[in-house]
Structures are given as C-alpha cells and as structure tokens.
Amino acid sequence: MPTFSPTGSVRAVPPTRNLSELRGPDIASAIGSDSIMVQPLGAIEQHGPHLPFNTDLLIAERVATDAVSRVGRELDVWLLPPLAYTKSNEHAWAPGTIWLSATTLLAVLDDIGRCIAETRARKLVFFNGHGGNSALVGVANREIRLAHGLMTFLTHPGVPADQGGSSPESELGMGIHGGTDETSIMLHLAPELVDMDAATRNVPEHLADNRYVRFGGRVGFGWLSNDFGATGHIGDPTAATPERGAELYEGAVAAFCEALAEVRAFEFQP
Image 1 (cartoon, one colour):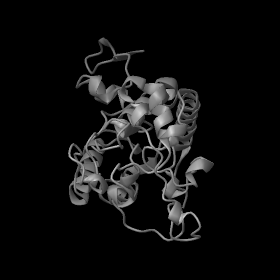
Image 2 (tube, rainbow, N blue to C red):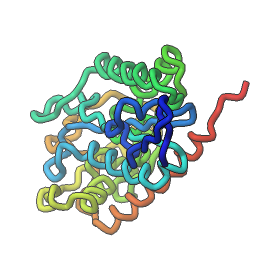
Image 3 (spheres, rainbow, N blue to C red):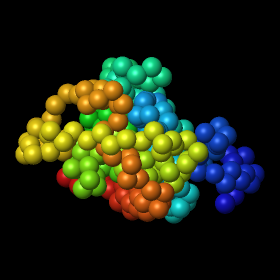
C-alpha cells in the first residue's frame, strides 16, 4: 500500500514483513504502536550423531517465517533476523557448539529490546527454538519490560518436554533433545541434513519411575547433555518419520499464528 512521505509524495513501502529489508524512511510509516516484533532464537549446538548443529535455529526460523507470512499483514507482525548463538552451555563439552554465557545473552536481549523501543512498536515476541534459553528469556522479558517499557512475550515452536510439553510414550515423556519429534521435524524440513543410520535410542529410563526428579517433573536439576551418555542426545530418534514431522510442523505454525492473534489483542488492564 502506498504511503505519503513528509514532502507529500507517494512512496511505496516494500512488500516485506522482514524488518531488515526496510529502508530507513520506511520505519516511520511501516512500524506503528500496534506492530509486533518477532525475534527468533536458535542455537548452534550438538544434537547427537544424527542431527546438525543448526537444528534449533532452522526450526525456529522456518516456523516463524511461515507464521509471519500467513498473518503478518493482518496482525502487523514484523520478523527480525534470527539469533543463532544463545545459551547452549549444557553442550559446551562438544566441539562445534557455539554458546553465549548467561550474562552475555541477557545483555544481547536487553540491547535488542532497547533498539526496538526506539521504534513505535510496543510488543516484542521471543520465538525460542532452544529449551536451554527458556528460563533466561523469561528473566529478560521482565528486565526489558522494566527498562524499556515494551510488552514482552516468550513462546516456542513446541513446548519442551522438560518444561511441561509432551513427548512420545516410547520416550517415557523425556524426549528433550534430538528425540522423536525434533528428528521428525528435521526429516520434514531438511532430510539431507539428517543421518538416520546414526540414530540410536537414548532415554534415561532410570528416571522414569520418579514422580518428582525427572525431566518434566516438579523438581528441576542442573544437567549437561553428556550426563546421559556420550552421544549427547536424549530421546528416541529411531521412531522419527517425515510424516510425523510435517504434522508437527504444521501444528507449530498454526499455533504460533493463533498466539500472535492473542499477542495483538493483549493489553494490561489494571
């Protein structure tokens, strides 16, 4: 849709929902107080012998991109470039993992919030593909709210199993990293990056009977991915299929579209 510049001439805003593709003058005309900014968060970390290091990044970026392409214009949603390096130090033992400290990531997220607050947008959504970021991003949400006045949100392509989400019965509810569902989505999105010949089952069955101290239980615990074996994954990728991945992926995109509609309507009501 054409807009008018300060001089009165007609100027067309580029047909994009990617903030990085706008030109400087477009910010004033394209970004308003109802605009929603979406920041995908990924990771570059080992995902066992069968999945690539960019698994979390690829899933978050693709789901966010497809969701914004569906509802971006209707809901005034804008996509920011994905952040690849995040808090992945549970995989620090594995060469090739590139991770930021908690202090650094908090500072980076605050800097992003500060910059978004320079526009007229009031809402910032962190779309997080890496479960190891969740607690820290929850802290960042409140810090950014306090420091910069933005309304901040955190959501995921799928809620991690250790944070209240589900995983297949074969994984005893503990498929949290490189398991059935994550591998299935990658078989759907990028099968050329998946080596199913290297996939093995690695489920911490010794925790399965615990009511509290287990992945997804009410008592959390600090862990590193190699605490549960040298392969570094936790789950059962051998059960993965591209058909399951397509279903999970479509569900993730649809759910994010619905969530964005609620973000659009969300306001604090004292």
